[in-house]
Image 1 (tube, one colour):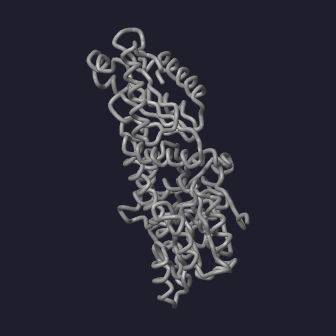
Image 2: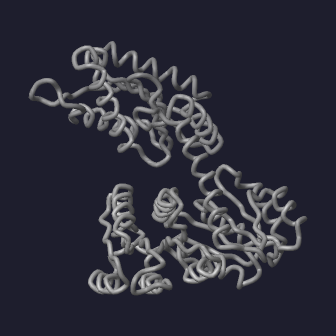
Image 3: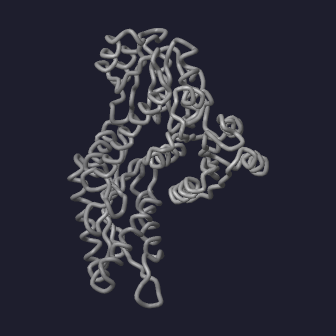
Length: 432
């Protein structure tokens, strides 16, 4: 079944535009303007009153993506500026010296993205971090699951304020179908009451396919039922929120923490599998992913070729121009290999100036034509400025094992032997 609802943040092609600052204090306004412009490299337009804000918005309608507002202004002492800015569809953050429950409840009722106490010395740091998440959120898809339509609407609206993309479902079967279709979903918010199963059961089924490293789950339990919260956690949820006690601030803090964990794990994993200089896969990941790809090709009867590529006379380049230029050459070649790769290829740097490619689905003739074209492109592309007037060009020798082998090691051995032959027969050539 299709999702029961979906909404996307505005300006999907590039969310960040201009930023509005409304603050009547010269000292705090200068500080906030400087910090925001430095963090975003975008212009910040500073107003000091509601009247100035209304005039600016009338002139620049649709050009602001975010706003940072003071709750108390000379001509708007009770947060009236918030209604004006939020009404323009601008993601709004508020700061104020007034921290009473009455003011906090009033601010949150206006659907702002966040609200910070002005006197806190860390408030600007917190606000900048929260503002920097908004462009990220527009690419983050969240699934909300619950039988109660009011629950789905309330939670979805809170997510829309922070510019998340949202899909909703009222039953577990639909939720699982959505997760299979939209693999980019990073967060699931699930109520205990789901139409065809309880939320804990749904958590268990989700975890059978999606691990914590790629998907976070937050369960919602009734406020007076502590047992449900424990069951959620044991069923695979990362966190639990009591529905009856839901506070907007707590809601945002919990989803932010869960998503930060997912992103940190992704960064750590990416660092572990990529080469630090080129950004290509490293030797370790090449063997792990390559072994899986070879197994799949052998099961399905598809062809897999293994290619080794080496820069000719690379030691001479380092000795003549220095290792910094050598690094530039390696990075330039890596970019060419990445740009020429087809979907499904694995491209890795496996040694100093050695690269390896695994190419599925091509015949031997098709691959040789592609490799000859690649060899020519590399020879014709300047890789780095040289000490003289002419740019520095390099050539490569290529060895290829064109047929699917019994093991990745055997294919690499064949490709390496072909590379050795290419080197000994004059370099700048392809041998298979």
